[in-house]
Length: 184
Image 1: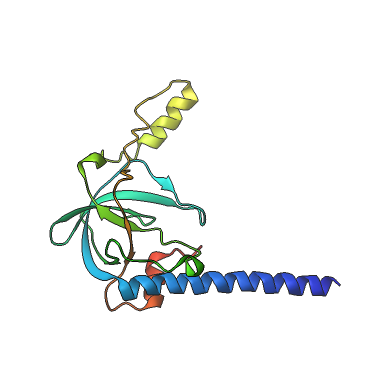
Image 2 (image 1 turned 45 degrees about the horizontal axis):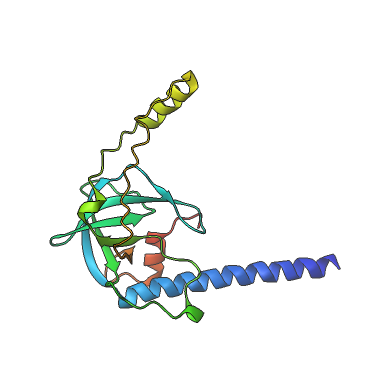
């Protein structure tokens, strides 16, 4: 009886892994075939980061960037970029129709891009020692208001679209490798 339960559990887990892998492949293929190549020049990073939803749990960082040649954009990604870095991407045009609800993706692409507006504000420079200073202040019983700047690019009126890090000649395995961490 235990062997049958182990077999059933193994088949269920294998089925879930297969479904997630197939969905990951389909979502990256959709962006690869319907996307356009572009180059981002990364600007400053916003201080506040958000957690992705629903799974996998990872930090999503917001950056200012310039989409070559001259479009000011805001990008959100789980990858860490450096100011001044040039990144080749594949992005969807705004208004691109995603698959219908009966054929939608299980795991959404975490990176998105949208045009920058005045409502986004200017990112403050990231102070790498702020977390340590905040922990020390909290341990000593003082309340430092300088820790939480709250500056994050959030403008719900702007529509964002998905992008993947990778060039036009990158295949699906390369796009998956460039846009997902080993733990995923």
